[in-house]
Length: 118
Image 1 (tube, rainbow, N blue to C red):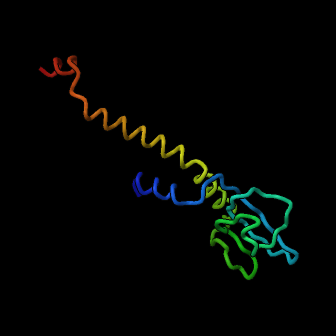
Image 2 (cartoon, rainbow, N blue to C red; image 1 turned 135 degrees about the horizontal axis):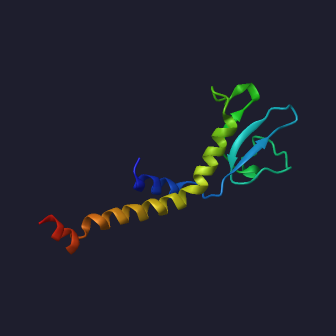
Image 3 (cartoon, rainbow, N blue to C red; image 1 turned 60 degrees about the horizontal axis):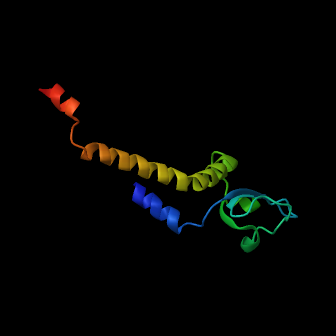
């Protein structure tokens, strides 16, 4: 994936910040998700996506709908949210680096370097 593709993904995805949500219901069927709203004491039903802003789930325990094989649901959710929140700044820095590299290759050799070659 290149910088333009990442910038496009950033532009069309749900804006940040993204948060980790730990949800539970009356039957102790929990979920760990990435959401647009932070954890709260609302105990919203897992099916009420509008209320708690879930974007992606890394664990849904009810009948083991979503359970990572390596058990790293919390770590995966943290990475997803952190990368989304960091992406605008990472893209900015990558563009600056690409521009600096382009400027280096576009400049003619300095007189000091040109004289040293003879």
